[in-house]
Image (cartoon, rainbow, N blue to C red):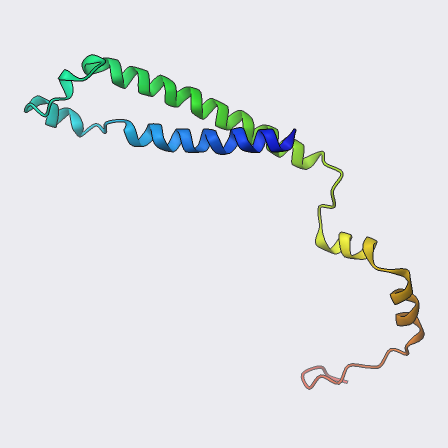
Length: 114
């Protein structure tokens, strides 16, 4: 389930990037006034802007929903959430017995006062 959400999330992210790059900025209106050919597009002057803005809003909504669901799945997973906890729980018992038999020596560091 999590893998499917990841795939949809990455596809939504790439879709948002592509749709944002396809849209004209606010400065493009000045270029259209001097005959840059934007009015002769397939959707007309405002048709492409309306279609692209709606598609971007839909893709952003999908991205937001997948972000929330990935956060929910990560917080409710049975996996270890900390490397320290994982190391403590997976340490072999033989190493623990061998370590407890060794005497603990004081530190020989130069910067530690004795």
